[in-house]
Image (tube, rainbow, N blue to C red; front, side, top):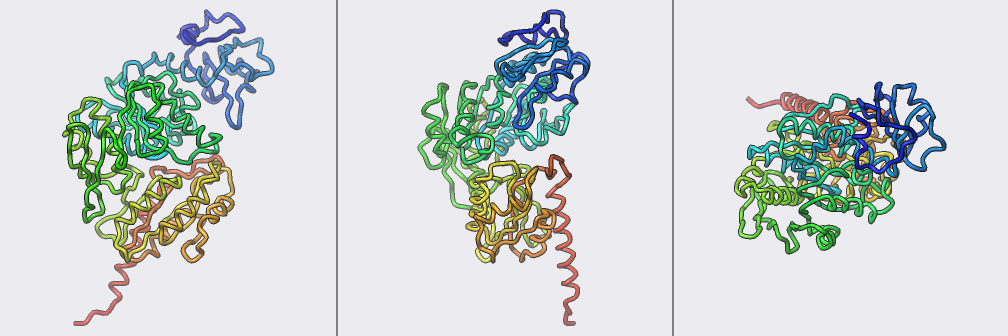
Length: 510
């Protein structure tokens, strides 16, 4: 494409004439440069690629986008495009390079601290079950109408570690969705994505808010700033669906410029869920009420948080024109959300094992509360968890306190230590979990999982929290394969064999 066409509508200045320049690629990472590339210089928390400016022409770059005030000098052998906000330009340029595919799609965005993935997955399943052409962009995986999306170029496996992909991944995905005739795209929108303007070119037909609690305070200066970034999504939408039981959501619902549908269990809302008596398996059915709609939903997923997530997904689908009965029938067919209170056991196991992505104080408390309902009073709730490195350290002690207050026993271990020393992270957690008799520290997460499964008593429930869907461990900047499902399944198999061996060794009377 002509560089002038890509820059249409983006306020900028140029150091040299650019009318003749054809761009065949847009790169923001040096390794992604190909001959004929436009290179976007970005400031990050650790690196500033404006430092690469003297080397870009020799690498085959035709022009560079630079941010005003971020450079000492500009190279004479390379045309430079000067913009006020390079992050915004990054998204706008990729949108233009892909011919603005989002304009032909119905976009649904979901933001909040917890519940984004489950709500997005439920909504995606509702659409699929009702024959709609739909795509999903989620923390777990991206799907195009039932097919896992594998980008042609994903340097450093970026899709595997991002809730909302960078523009160079997001807009090609949307272009492929448009090419395949998909009508609706459901996507998780993180506070990082909003702060970094990844979705600035997108107008959403629906925007959902799940809840707000302390998270990502390594990136945002305060909880108020974190909430303010979330709120930006609702300046990009035609209609909002908001959890009014959440304090931030309640305030949010009163000040948005677009029409709002409120959801909740406790507060008076447009769409309300009224929990019914728990069934034997610990799952809570609920009565859905919105206007003239009444339906007893028998959700097959445990926990009050599952009610909230399904309530928001159902309300969105109904607002988008799917018949209510079809919405609820689809919801009732969902038996698992990958990495979200996902059962890892079989009928032959004498204990229950679940994995979950919970990595905040609030999410961990909700998870443990839901798990408690799945066991008898005499059985034990065992938690295996840690906290991520290079992330908000203020949540570590509170998560330790939640583990002590809501689990019978905790095995404290690694969880993506990144560049931090694992022992330093665990020391912070132990400030909250002070009961030495109900905790054990095992740095090696594989050993921690194996220990919990081997030592559990019959009837106990083990929660592996923090990693959920992830199949890697991030240490010192490197991704190492690490699949908790496989580790748990192998440990359960060894437990079964040991049990069978002991049974064979017990003498029987003739």
